[in-house]
Amino acid sequence: MLLNSALGHNKNQKTVNSWLERLPRGNLRGSGEQLIEIHGFICQNVSHPAQRLDLQQQLFDHVCRWLHELEIQFSENACNHPTLRLARMGSKVLQHLLEPLLQDLRSTLSSRPLLTWRRRALQQLTLALCVARRYACFALRCHVELNGSFWLATHYLYYNASQHNWLQHQLPDGQNILHSYHQLQLMGIADGKNLSPGEIEAALLWTERLADKITLQALPAADTASAGQQYLLDLTRGAPPQRLLDTDALPQHEHCLSCDLSAAIDALKAHTGHGSIPGCDALSVIVAQRLMETWQSPRRRRHQRKAVMQSMALIAQMRSIRQILGGGATRPDMQTRRRDRTPPSQISIFQAINKSESGLLLRGDPGYQSLKIGELLLIADKQALRTPSLYTVRWTAVSEHANEVSCGAELIGSDPEAVDVIPLAAGQHVSYQPALRLPAADGDNNADLLIIPGHSLLRGKEFRLRDQRGEHRVKVTRMHMNTGLYQAMEYQLAS
Image 1 (cartoon, helix red, strand yellow):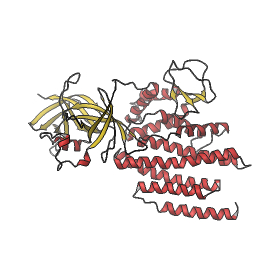
Image 2 (tube, rainbow, N blue to C red):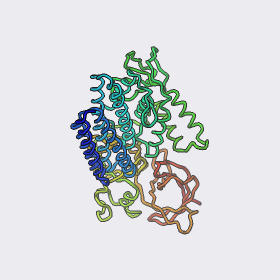
Image 3 (cartoon, rainbow, N blue to C red):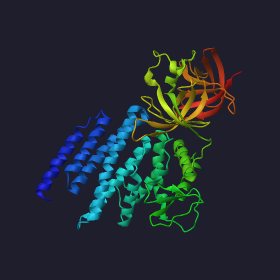
Image 4 (cartoon, helix red, strand yellow):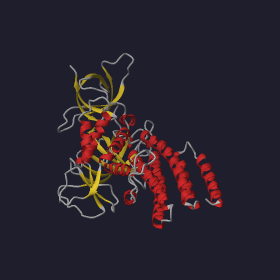
């Protein structure tokens, strides 16, 4: 290294270190903005490729620690306004890291200076792949959409690693490039929008375990593929592998590969069939079942959807819902609620995009309300002044460009009432806990529903139920729905 180059590197290193040490620790958004500024400084002021790569690696290590804190914030306060901004900031930081790395790799591969190009290109490709994998994990954990060029970038990394025989090169975590690329493709076909934070972590572990069981090969000459196990991977298309149906014509192109999931699906089947074996925790089995079903056959809608565009007033979480309902007293309408009981900030206005017999597709700014998977929503038509209905959050997706979240809400029932319950077998120091009651609906559900926080109650358990008419002894007869955060149970008056 030339002396002036070394001096320049030392100066840049000190500058970057100083900025990283002064990151505002208690301000995740502010830290994200400064991480982007630091990376811009590196790209603009460090011209030597090896020095720039060293600083990019150092910055990525800091970014990973920052992302971990951000993901914790999101899991605790999913999809409220502050965490939406953080999720978009995390995505922005990762994009700023990945795109210059890809540009440097393209430049290195095209110039090919003697002796050094191969090692430098491999280092750039390795770091870019690590950033891409961290980006995919972040997108699953925070329900954000990946950048439009993300999948083309991962295919580009795989293609060049294959061309230069680098697929078996080891990454810092001990896995090789091929394994990491396989894992990325599994993340791409794992639908994480409807998974809770714990389920997402289990899904990520499964993608890591199953990555070596994927086979990438040239497409067979036959016109059909094994249903539910063969996927088409087009390296020129900005998308993860697409499931092949029996009727699909197989394109015979060099850039099209068969992604065979047969062995991975068999491993999931074996795991779900031995859920009672010690070490097979229930969450791992549940997620394995979901992944197996998702990869074998796409989900089919049970009900026809009708496009609508109407404003809906939305309130999340049982505590806020009970405030609106009046705690068992006569319910005020959502639009004429008493302001001294419920601050206006607790109500968000969403647009219903479409609806079916089972629920709604909503889009809007949740404000400071947390829309976790399995959370309760009280929703009313803002214009029609109808009785509000109770829904549960089934999936969420963060918009990349606006303070909005898309949300799938499944209907539980209408005309909810705030009540209190206590198990009959509870000790003398146990107090009433908040609950909601839904009257029997027309159709298949002809029993009243009781909704209680948690997931530990069993069929046949008896409670004392307290409402505005007094106390009653009731017995749970059937589990109607388990959202992960709440249980909706059918019940009847006990004799």
